[in-house]
Image (tube, rainbow, N blue to C red; front, side, top):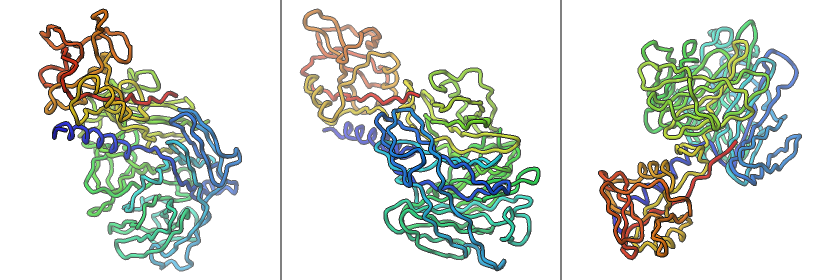
Length: 537
């Protein structure tokens, strides 16, 4: 094994591992539906869970089971919705208006547990009259230990009273909803400007009311938890109120930039909170980006939308559809990568792009009427939001990320794997070495794949690599190991094919991954490969 080849192997493996942690996919989820008393109506809201399977033969178990029953066996690309009756109850407020923040600590076991045999994405929605709120559900294994609390938004009729009002619904305080998805009890503390702590048992959820302070506050736990920021009936328009609900993002170890979609920004404020700052930021005419190492949530009447940092953009998203509502996709992408976006199998052409001032990004919004939409980029990453609007009432959430690894073939639910092996071997032995790790010696019959793989492999280490190309001893014709036609060739410039029977690819920066023939017994590092699994909807 050479030092360089080992480094290449580890680098490629690390890229795959890191990309998988940034997706919204998983096998275990815990869902809660917050109290929704919008429009002061005594009827129950309509609560639903959407589950999208990414692989065939996906078996779903939901506990407690919905009316439709459980488990479900789904095929790749199929989305199934389930009506749920579980809802968090009313949060009992203290009779004293002078109670300290976080004094109310209400525990409930009204959680919904979802387990799956294979990776899925999960979204939730609560509808009551015109009040609609949707949420992306993060898998249990991708939750965090620390979350910064946003400032409470200033809402006329809800948070503008000067004193805390607890006996009038729409003037009640905002609340934190903290979920323990683990199999053990979790210790939770709310810190900053005083501290309280408590225990949450496995599968339970805590509700804590919160008032505004100028001090940065955060939730910290000894095991991963999910944290939501919610109000059951915040004042909106025409003397109505509606549910506000948003997932808090995990605290970051560095400051990130959050591009703000212009279609939502002009009437909005951004709720920011991290270790060093807590406050509001209004839309600026000269800049459409905010920075934070913690929470960044866009607020406008009826909507709390968790913003996506540019470091967590994805390449493929699954977007649901809510019947009888106006559904939209909002896309934010680098201005040089507008042309690689696809909606399903169709390239996105003639979109109305809007510049995000002070950034290199552009944004567009598209109406959608498909029951389930797949949106992906063939060469770059982007941010996608699922939003809706009805009579000036917004709802929405970040779209579920299926993949953060762009692929020219489509939405890669399982990324391709490209490995330059540690040991240099003969061409024949290289075939077996690739098989030993579940891969195959790469065949490059497709011109797009040639360019794609060339862009992935480093040009400052191994000089030449075996590929799955050989000359027939009977006819002298070249062929690929995967038996695809040998049409789109990429011989190195000026190369005169000699007596070599096997194909090598040059990784020298000046050779553009050109091919040469070589003696099959020569020891060269092979490129092993596994095709991605492409999701079709």
